[in-house]
Image (cartoon, rainbow, N blue to C red):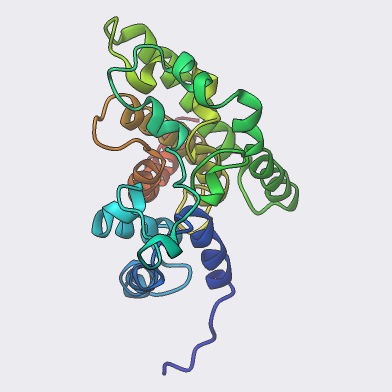
Length: 269
């Protein structure tokens, strides 16, 4: 209608959306979520290159709060009824869901009962496609860094922020706190979708900071908020989505303070 070209960025968003939603999500719900993200998350801000939030992550956020049962796995859809439509079985809980309860006093031991570290790394686990194989995510990260598309500062800052925050939480939380807080810091990288989020979603050049220092700060804060939501918040098993969207909103502010700091240093010199 507006005689404008469709940006190739929509192809990227489409592929990412497919990787961060459950395979069983009803397609009409997915269509509503995509329409919400494109119209209210992208076009109202001015279209391609002007959006504040990552469009693909907005789709998941909308679906998570609008259709929580289908996103969290509390409702399982089965075609038909009766003995002729029996299914082999339901998928099991994701690794993060296994250790989310505060009653789990040793998350590492509880996780080991269901998945070994090799399965977690290679992707032989339940969950959305993007959070399964950490090996595939690392290959994607190498490609993005080699081509200059993704910022290695954001990726490394996020990993360091996650590991450091998990280590500090274990030191300061009371004994017997339980849940994901008792995971080994490096195990936070193997469970959930943090690696996928920090590599493919947080590095979106439109919704992330433009300064190099700002990217470090941005990545570290994403890692920090992710661990905070996982370990302390009792409601949400995963914090990657919420942390990326929150830091998307603060990305311009981070750049503002970095630039202001540079200007002050130059004036002093």
